[in-house]
Amino acid sequence: MTYILALDQGTTGTTALVLDQRGQVSGRGYAELPQHFPKPGWVEHDAHEIWSSVLTAARRALTAARIKGSALAAIGVTNQRETTLLWDRRTGEPLGRAIVWQDRRTAERCAELRRRGREAGIRRMTGLVCDPYFSATKLEWLLEHRRGARALAARGRLAFGTIDSWLVWQLTGGVVHATDPTNASRTMLYGLRSRRWEPALLRTFGVPASVLPEVRRSAGDFGRTRGVGGAGGPLPDGIAVAGVAGDQQAALFGQGCVAAGQTKNTYGTGCFLLQHTGAKPVASRAGLLTTVACSADGGVAYALEGSVFVAGAAVQWLRDGLGLLGQASESEAMARSVTDSGGVVLVPAFAGLGAPYWRADVRGALLGLTRGTTRAHIVRATLESLAFQSRDLVDAMARDAGARVRALQVDGGAVANDWLMQYQADLLGVPVRRPRVIETTALGAGLLAGLGAGVWRSARELQTARALDREFRPKQDARWRASEWARWRGAIDTLLGGSRR
Image (cartoon, rainbow, N blue to C red):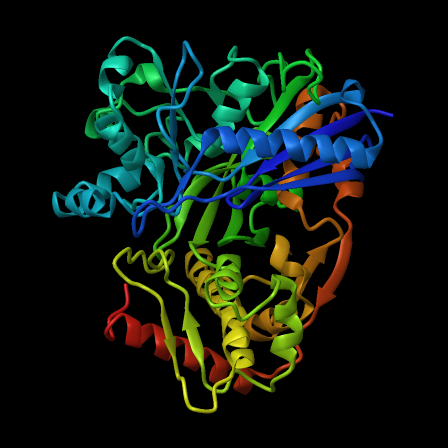
């Protein structure tokens, strides 16, 4: 039996899956990852803690699968996108912590670029709006504020990477500094049509070309393992690293959405709705992003994307910030314990509003509180906010595509919540389809690696890995749907002062 190790390095932890040659999960491993909040609006990760979580998750997955690392034919990597890191090529040491995708410290720099009329050109080249979400202003900030960074960059000593590049570097013992088109397309430095690092954007953000990783095909050669984990490490030398993709594009591929019009939504720390658009990029008119996706063979294709910054993270806030839950899984029973949210609406704009609004200045709000409000109402309103924000994205997608989504493929940790999935189906008025393997981000990375390493020769061989678990069909009528949606739109209007973008 041939096996593949899929590594999914996320915002709050790392998941590892061992897949057999049929694409079935033989073992799982997970390790939490601390987040650091040095200032309001700042979010950071320690690169060594990221790598440690990857090794721990990999060991646990191999143990669960009852195999040794020598049984692996390939490794696939997927990652939290946009998170930005600099490290010294000679020593391998990071220049401080990574700046996480949620971080808002460069909001004023983005506002300045918009005031100067630069956003239209950036969007034309990259498909992205000018927002601190993306890597370019983060990298610019690191080069300006990390001690000695500019001097080291001038001598060719620095390497920049999103987290996939850092993991490939670590897996290959510093031999390979590379990324793939899906991650490159999230940096605000990469041309969608040119498929290269854009010199004009490098000049805008003061980024020397010497720090950039090589862009390689998502299903392809990213080197071989070397010295992973030291003596007795979980992975022997010589295993092919053969697949890399950003988390949302990996999930799109894992769901089998490789043809124009196919759509998936991932419910993780944030929510990310992607619709495959085929071989050509489609410009959005409704506040979405144009991004690179994977074709059926792991090559370059395109997608429209809507990003919600806070989804599952809002449930974590209930648990860790407010103490309303002992564990996140309690949220389903608590939501079922009340007939409705009692008029309460949560807009979890803790890091601003993402698509389709793009308002970095807005903060969260809990509206409709009365003396009769209980913690169950607040918990239910929080779960509803995930569905409301997802419908915002689905509606925007429909405006761009000229047709409504007919069914929604879903994945991510929150889709285990049956109440939330039924509410989502009711709110959208279309079936919501949950796969048997809900870690489709990791699954997608593993399938790409299998294609890259020749374990599978075509996408048709991957269908057995994409089995359906359950379909949630709408049970509510149009009047109920309109009433629920009006509550959310009223909350958004209140928060934005009656003006929408």
